[in-house]
Amino acid sequence: MPVEVSSDAKSTSQRIGLLLGPILFFVTLFLDLDLSSPRVTHMAAVTVLIATWWISDAIPLSATALLPLVLYPVLGIMKTRECAPIYVNSNMSARPPQNESFNTATRWTNPSSVRLGVRLSF
Image (tube, rainbow, N blue to C red; front, top):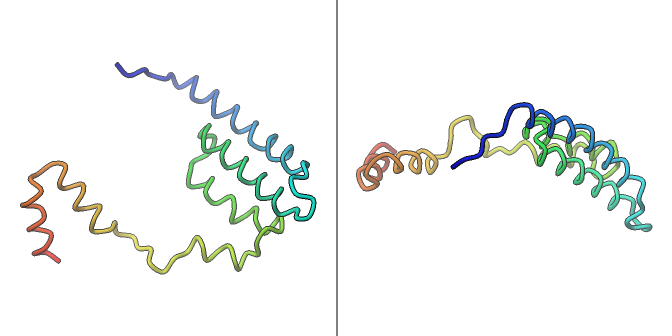
């Protein structure tokens, strides 16, 4: 029997995560995890912020995933020219991969007939 979470409880956890993320970020940022390299501390602070916001779902996951693109250059972890290509890949396309279409179709129909149809259409 699934347990339903009320919208009030979800929004409360989101608000807590939204506030807790930056607090933990700055606390981690002021710790010296590795005295020889401040990048280690900066990377840990970004990781703590992202993890807090992912777990609490404070902001959409797609926006949270873009935080390194903004924070890495600001904190001196990576240059924008090094970081941006990670997010833009020449293999990305608007249509889903053929395997995803096949996997979705096999859930609802006979796999052998779908496999034959996929082979004939491509």
